[in-house]
Amino acid sequence: MAVGGGESEIFKSRSDKREYRRIILPNSLEALLISDPDTDKSAVSMNVSVGSFSDPVGLEGLAHYLEHMLFYASEKYPVEESYSKYIIEHGGSTNAFTTAEHTNFYFDINTDCLEEGLDRFAQFFIKPLMSPDATIREIKAVDSENQKNLLSDVWRMNQLQKHLSSKNHPYHKFITGKWLFFGGTRSSFFS
Image (cartoon, rainbow, N blue to C red; front, side):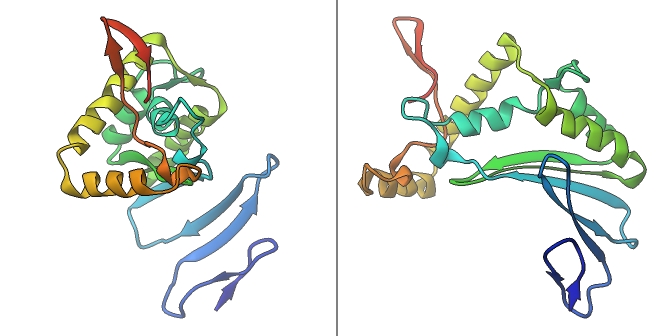
């Protein structure tokens, strides 16, 4: 069954009672709106078509690091962590992930709080704030994730596959990010 929505059709099963609408905003951002009157939550997800394959040489892990940094504060909501606090206080959760070619940010919240939650979320992409203190904390957090991953056999096998792949392909890159110290000074955020 096809559902209208701009230039493309949205296909859904006959048993799917939700309503769908595709919109294109003035800035060319495409959005899929889904209405389900039987749920008590609202959810938002934004996918950016940039992931670890886009990390510049010498800054491997940058996409993952920026995924972390965007959720701290914005010009409109400058108090660090106020976004997460708002979402949690209103029955929701929030997270993000970075893959090879995409970074996805998402949250869910009680439906009556969606408008402010969405505004807080949008501000990270409009005018994010990245303080020096938050920068250092997130570099350490990304490094901590990397250290945790080193204990995983699945992660180590994946890193071995990457190491054995062609050095000319972005798959070969290290993607998580880590912080190295030499002689007590920061020599590189990512390596």
